[in-house]
Image (cartoon, rainbow, N blue to C red; front, side, top):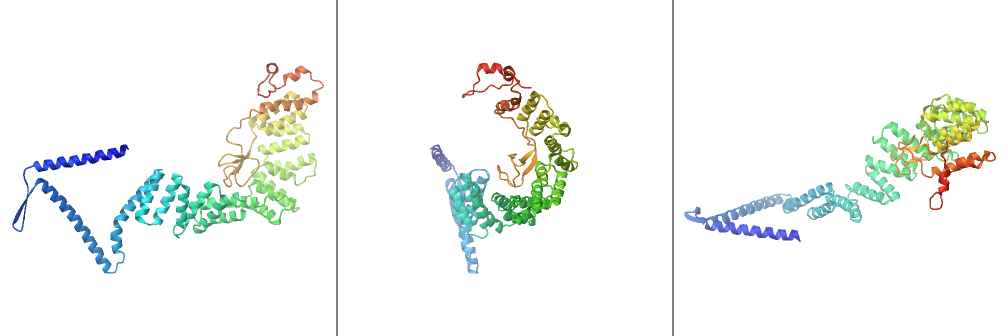
Length: 498
């Protein structure tokens, strides 16, 4: 409404100015004298201005007619498109102007304006190769996915724009969660452009999600051949894929191919802990203990890990606790100062009931890097050495709220996994899990405060016959009612455990 009113006011103002100018020119004395073929013409000021305008228009018409004559002569000389280019020149100029304005609007984030300019450019240019992509991207920005899909489908009909259309539809399917169709489209896109890095990464991630390990290894080889992946990274990721294909190798129904792939994964990346553990189990399934022990020792030397210790224990499953301590001593000597080595040896000595030796292995670990595992082992040592229950309860109370120590953490989203996986279950990124302590500090939940009475109650059950009611009240935890409130009598009886 305001815009229409403004246009009317501007029009009226222009008409008024023209009328005022014409009046001034009519009142102005003098003029222009022109002599043509002996005849003299005298023009007033107003007539002179009108004659000048007519002359400019006539000159413009003359130039247009001259260019038309030139185009006609070219057409007669064999240039079949000369006349069509002449008539389409103005349309092309308008179309390219609309196209450039649409691209500027798209870069500025104005989806609706870009869509309008794209429609105008399409009207004048009638060149889908230029305008369909702008229409698709502008429609996506403005939220019209149906129109964007139609534009991408039109791009499929042209061999030059086929890749753009396939990639656009693939990204739409990804946003809709249709990963199966997106994977098929990514395969077609990669066949059209094998060197396209984004399509390579997308296809590799989708194949890993779908557990298509053979296809993923083929895509990984394509990345290596096209130079989009360094060879050392290729070796590790190829080992990850081989390891993923060999999962379930310890099952009775595991195929020979799965076991060979587990061994191949360890060969490709010897420092990959899950690959070493699974390859060792593959050797054990074949009855080859010496190769299993050799590769476990080699990996332990570079990176001690609980999975390696479990696999090493499976080499001799029927040995006694003392024999296991003696055998694991070979492993401990390879990396004696590592925290995992000290924790494993402490656990084994606790099982063997050699509590002083277990304490020696823990040493200052409970103060330097206290986590739930180390503190729980310390509580077991104190219990084994006959310490008072209050001391044991104190260690367990600390373990209840302590960090859990190193875990499989995704380097992309910091999501914590209970077991190693080739693909992060949270962000679906490939080969991003590493064994480390989480960067963000772990905060104990409010429920941990209510777990302490269970621990102290179980530990105190052995001395229930000698403990009186007053001592039990010292370590009792107030029990909330159904609404979460604590009775006043219970609040007075609460004491903090040592």
